[in-house]
Amino acid sequence: SLLQQALIVASVALVVAAAPAADSKLPKDFKRCKKHDPKINECLKDAIQNAIVSLKKGVPALGVLTIDPLRVTHLLIDQGTGPVSIKLDFNDLDIHGLGSTRVDRVKADWDKYTIELDVTVLEPVILDGQYKVNGKVLILPIQGNGHNNLTLENVKAKILILGKSMKKNGQEH
Image (cartoon, rainbow, N blue to C red):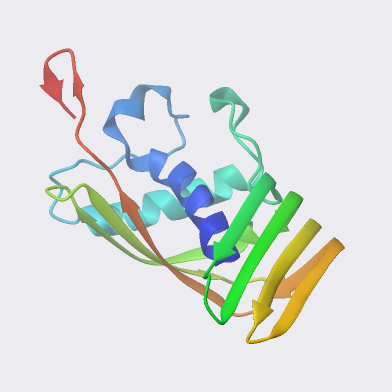
């Protein structure tokens, strides 16, 4: 969904708080976690939650812009070719409310290079921008364009971040 894609963008930025390779570039107030900490999931949960607070207004030292509102210049949702299909194209989208995200659960699996997050957005999420839609439900066409202002309440999301190993200076990261 649109919100899941937006939350993934925000979450990737947030997980930087736990990235050992980025450690030296992080602001001093960002919490750091040790990969082999027996309570790594709790540490990551706290680190990501603290990062949300910092990222809400942006982190100029890292060149990170604000996440509330999160500016998305283009977002395309293209689902299905059967009886229900939709192509929804958003442009110049401002997403408000992501700064109120609460991290409910984090589970890191370093062997699989994955981090799972369960999050709740405590304030309404407002998506404001331009849209074009083209699709159908059974035989009914859906077409339109213009300004959109969507308000989503009680937003909960499960996010899965997939990583991969990389070699740098002969070491695997």
